[in-house]
Image 1 (cartoon, one colour):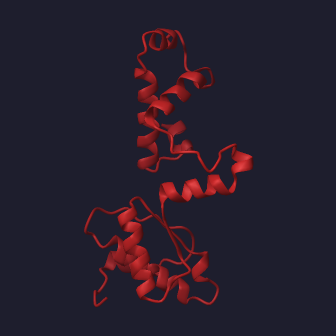
Image 2: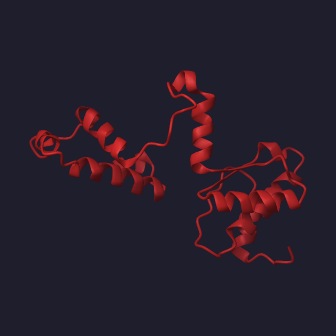
Image 3: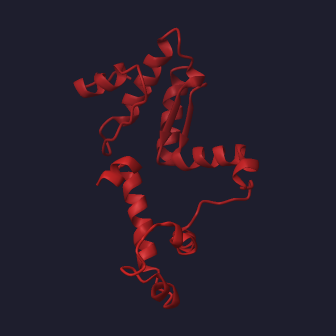
Length: 166
């Protein structure tokens, strides 16, 4: 590649024990850094390329990372988008999950419907939040808010334990 890693990139590349989440903006060298880290991990005797998983958020990043790894001779490391990997897990476990190969990603509207159907299990005080009024008016405001909050927590990598203590 001809690129010299920064100090921060070197920390990531040389990290061996445990999982590592890399969060960085566009053009910051994430793909380069992750590819170098994969190659470093694969150089250890106790780690096989096929035991390494790289998750990205876009098809473009997945393609780019896969291509760079292939150029370096690594065709065993799995590179996938977050959604494709999750769908693969659901498909492989379809009997347990009740999903079929025809199942699709859940839309925001389906998430709101799920929230409405399951609102009694949320442990929220109906005296404060009037679910019946929301549902009767066709307004899914509170449910849309719940779904947005869940998405924001996931994107911010906030665990359920951290959320409960908050």
